[in-house]
Image (tube, rainbow, N blue to C red):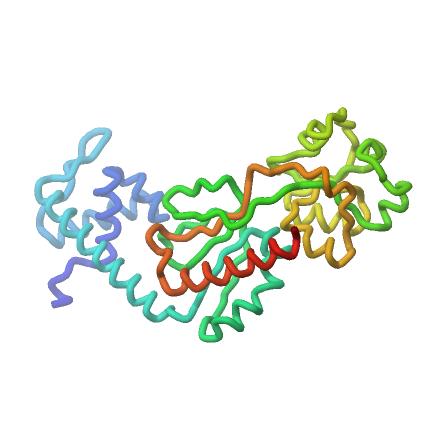
Length: 301
């Protein structure tokens, strides 16, 4: 039977070319040269003894034989992909892969993972820390934790926590700045900025009815980095309530005006493949996360 099959390396080139109707685009997708794709298509046509594409000046089209073969190939490759994914999942039932954003992982999640491991000792927990969007179609991540607006194309999401922001600094910095007893005192401080944050110092001062002082200060691209800068005494950060909770409890940071909290539009979402909410691994993580969030909220009210 294998002797009756076309050269297998030619089938991906044919499928990509038939789907894109362009050898150039197929070559880019497959990370091959245009010439390599062209040679593979020619080899497949020679093996089958038919012409699969009608080659015109600026475009190509599938011939009748090519269209029939393309339909068969796409169906068979889809079935093969589903079977392969099923086998991977059966062999991966004990591997729970969690993807988390960098700041949330470092300031909230990792210190709690030991309780997830204790609750589900049969799971091998893998934490992937990245802010890059996750493609669930790749099949290697079970659940994703992200900070955002709640809109995730081609994925299901549930909001697990909202947050507020308020000024925080180290005890030493507060003392050096004379106590910082009122919001007006921040005009004399170095303000630490989180680059790309949807809620800014300007928004906070506007909420307080104060002019924005345009104070100079360092900027960081991650919330966790701006928090660490505040702990080091570099200035006053606009602390996100979820991320600063443990540092406040430990005394590394102080909330200067905890009553002056600004609501944040973004929040923390648990994201997974559509329809996967009752998959055993996803269901287990959702249950554990719900308990952790409840305990956290009770402890920070």
